[in-house]
Length: 283
Image 1 (cartoon, rainbow, N blue to C red):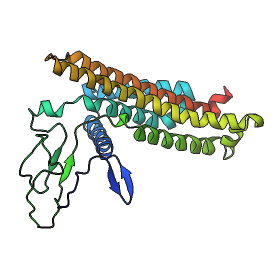
Image 2: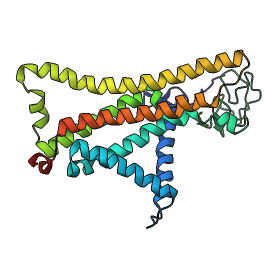
Image 3: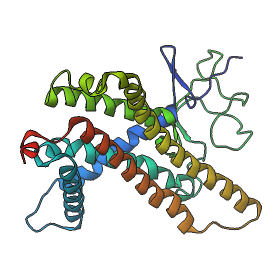
Image 4: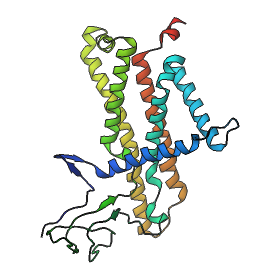
């Protein structure tokens, strides 16, 4: 009997393999950010409430940082990019601290929840989803199990190097295209060949910027996940509970710090590549 595996790791589309869990959680982060900020700013008041005050404080803080690095006019152009980058990376870093399995009193399986699909007869390993080899009801008599839609557990997308590297590549494209628009189409090439004999080293340095910042974020988030997995296993073996503060530290505090560092590094790279605007350079 033929068996289908749930679309978890990896997901194959057109011969290409994708990490289904990373894609799902990344899309969920974007949706949460859009909905959250839409709800906060849908009614802007002259005398703001708590939500609006938090948003205004966030925008004001990043406006000051970006304008100080790039000048007021140029900085305002890149403020939406830098602010959005920080929010996206922050939510990607901390989304994994929400224990859906515990919050739903075990109704959400730790390995994910499948919606639809042909029903399984027996859950041999008691993981809440169908696994190859487990008996199922072949409703359409096609000899294979028709899977439903898998809602995976919440995991940090940034612990996948493909996401951190992909974001870095897009930021590099935005940076060099912006430099060509603001400083001239040949500016990146002139900067690379200044001086000419240093061009190969400068090229390696540009590539290293993208790779290093990607591996830095990936390594810190993945390392935190591994540490918590090890500590959690030891706590389970010793039948002791983990303090909530430890989860909060690795999840929220470290995630926030790493998101800020990642954002500030890219702000530095972009400001160095583009330089100050004309009105700032004149002063």
